[in-house]
Amino acid sequence: MNDIIGDWFSGFGTPGGAAYVLTGFFLAYIFRWIRCQVTHETMKIPWHLVGIAIGTIAIVVTTVQSSVAYNTASATALETKECQKEFNQAIKDGRRIANENDELSQQQRRLFVDKDHEETLMWLNILSPPEPYASMDQRDPSRQDFNLSIVTKYSKRSFELDEQIRKIQETQDKLLASRPPLPEPTCGK
Image (tube, rainbow, N blue to C red):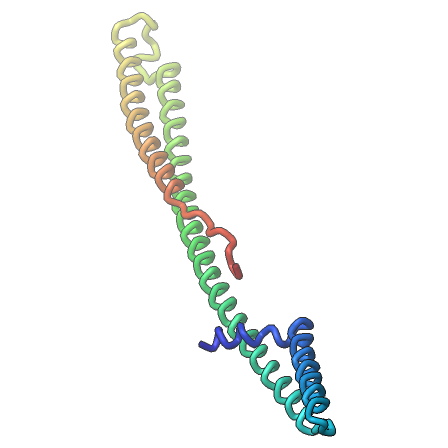
């Protein structure tokens, strides 16, 4: 109800509204003047009543405009507060996901380092094997079996590390897909 009355009276404070009020007073004056001409009365204008009417209208218009401005500011503040809550929540969720992703990236880097280390050990053992294999010929079946066991051990460990790396990557992909988008900037609309 207050908004309906506020909408109805809010135009009085504008230049157009003031023109309507003045036009109304002017037309009332003209009608009064015509009546006085027809009835041969002397037209007396009670200026103190006109002043009271103008003052009352000014007070009513100012009060209604203040009420409308307050209601508009309150509604805008509530919208902005809700928008800020959504924005803050999206930032918190995004930060949480980014932190989890960073931890997973660190784990993944450690696994890559482990895999590189395992490969280095494999090559060191093949190129510089311990005795008795170091003194054997490269074509010796015992040396070849030793080299094959080193490569098999590396392959098995490499497969385990690759599997862990793949799982971490899948988790990271799911995390990034679940990252909430920032809300559209609709505050105040």
